[in-house]
Image (cartoon, rainbow, N blue to C red; front, side, top):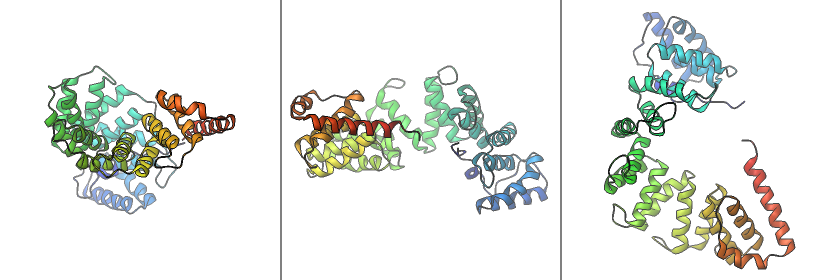
Length: 345
């Protein structure tokens, strides 16, 4: 069974944080247990946490639940972990409520339940958790686990953006770019995308790059866009990798480099970007940036077609040149791709 990681649990605990309940002796016990946890001595931490957790210390319950849920020093026990999270959440511990909500949202260690996820994100958000406000806003915007509420979602996104949450900054950029829930304001969208991109938010960096290429809400600057696409591409965002492929392939904002273009198209193609797959197929057919390879060209075109993207112009040129042997080789390569894509992860 996959090992699920509870989100933002132990990180929320600081040794200097006030304890919700317990005597001075229990406070010392919890602090020692927390130090043991941070040192990776999970068995000592678990033993030290048990007494304050049983006495109602919500921080101890949260950390004990983390140990069981993550299987740190013990076999993973999701039921036990969630039990301790719920006890802490019922005592008003916002990080524990966030952990429970995350488990219900993803089905980690329990049956997925969007209504319960939304309920516990609500609790955590009421307790001041910025990540919970962000997740709750997403659920409200999409109507997951309950009635949609776009206006409240935007207010929560605004709160998270004001707290410099990367996702909240990106969400506000997307809201102002779309112009549906709020009037379109491309300059505001640019500002939010840039702030989020500076924090490493890949989608924001990519969108800011697009706006720089197109001159939307900002002065056109393809050379600057390369930097932002690279931020997103380094995190594996295939759309940004494809964008870099086009910039290098066309010599836009950078010196024309067909080998670099092929490399970026290949990265995106391997991640399933169908447009990149057709571009890579073209490069293999033409022998630009890569060695000419009709089998590879036909294989990538076939993969793209299976994903809903076609290139009729390329197909018209490529198909007459394929030999029976080449078609058979491409068919085998396509099967290998499908096996790799469909294998359990």
